[in-house]
Length: 252
Ligand code: ADP
Ligand code: MG
Ligand code: MG
Image (cartoon, rainbow, N blue to C red):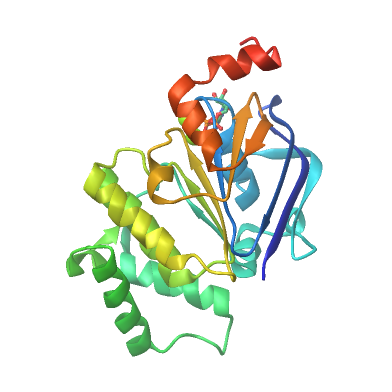
């Protein structure tokens, strides 16, 4: 079972301190949600954990099963089983969706352990069907011309195919209508098991009606300021963030 641990994480972008001492522990089987106002550093956390070069770690540690994640390249992090579904997935013209996913899987499995092509395609067809994706999406260029909702589904398809140990989903609900939201949530729920842990980043509580978290964390100004169970998300939905800011004496 995976054990992911973030301790006292400090991250800056262009000399500007964004994360200011963030702690988080995710074990296999657990779903953690991070909520928080816009601009508070949620996407920064996601990108920094995946090793995006724009983000500088100025203090703290990140480990997966005791291994130092911060020492790993982006590829090594993916190989270790970290996965990020991005808030704004990039379009990659010239690379088909199927090839992109197969390359990612094979990179993860390592040389000599590549997945057989037929087995890969069978699995891909099955997962696309589960996500109600048209079969034509396997040969289309990665995210090129995809609608917002199609991009989100495609991120979940990659996750379903890669079977990560820790999945970070950044605003996977943004821009989705209720039907697409349910499909995406089902896709996530189908992957829940003791072998994998989730970090669900969302601005809205609605997603958490469909992906019910074990833990909810509120992030403000680069830190987790409160943690609780799923009821915390409902409280935020009902009352907004201002009461918590007032309680904590946060002024922005
Ligand atoms: P959230 O995801 O919670 O909305 P972000 O992590 O996107 O917040 O942003 C946190 C802060 O970092 C914001 O003040 C934002 O303007 C800043 N920021 C994010 N990305 C960049 C970037 N690439 N360059 C400069 N500033 C950035
Ligand atoms: Mg934002
Ligand atoms: Mg964001």
